[in-house]
Amino acid sequence: FYFLPNKAPTLDKIATASLEQRLAMLEIALAPYPFFTIDRREANRATPSFMIDTLKSLRSELGEDTAVSLIIGMDS
Image (tube, rainbow, N blue to C red; front, side, top):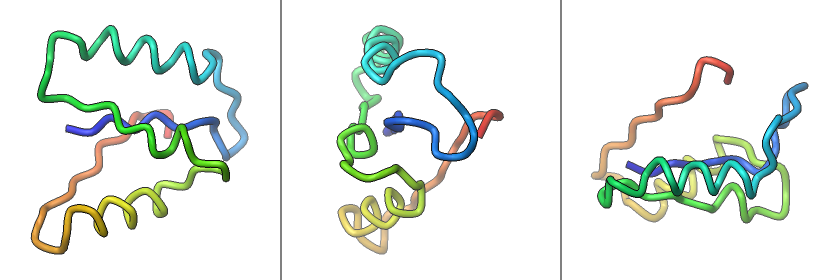
């Protein structure tokens, strides 16, 4: 599983926690689960993050034969 925190909401939302705080919380939450990965590509992107760009990036890395599923929060 890849967890993909975004840098900042792009659609009329303001994040309560900073990116650094959200990354720290995610690191703590995932610490007991070594098979989970924090993917920082959206957090490190210089431009606004849009999921379509991330999915295209993942597809190019994983190839056409790897299944990709997306689970997003209700607030998205």
